[in-house]
Image (cartoon, rainbow, N blue to C red):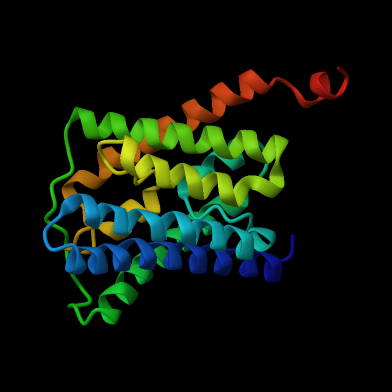
Length: 227
């Protein structure tokens, strides 16, 4: 692919990840302001916009970059031969930068200090395992639906994340770039910076486990088409 094509793709990845994080952080701020201390209502107000924006962003930007918006997804796609390895680093950098800019955008809209560090504690074996499970399920979903129902990917991913917000103890970050970006907001969506690394380790492990299992379950393309 040409440099211009790669540039368009990485800008799409930055834009998509940025808008995703703006939605996560911004809806978290709005939900917390309106929920009157009811954490369940605040979480619901954070969940629905996140699932919805994923559908929109994947529909809009998927034809340009593949709509990864997630270093764990890009890494798995490179390992599966669906992303050229030399494009992996530009994708990941774009996703991280875009995500961090998305946090700043959310702060700006709500007249909060742009530069913050989160203090919200999200740690412990249960939360680490929850991130493993969340990303396991996300990659299992993506790989399977890409194979069998490509047109349904935006809806499958949006619905999966909507569900995972509620069935995981960590509220399903499932994304290293989003995790980094959420360390920069001391709001409802935040995660203390010292807890980021182990979340990311759990996410990457879960991503490869999910992709590996579903790859084995589906079997080779040739064997299915020959049936």
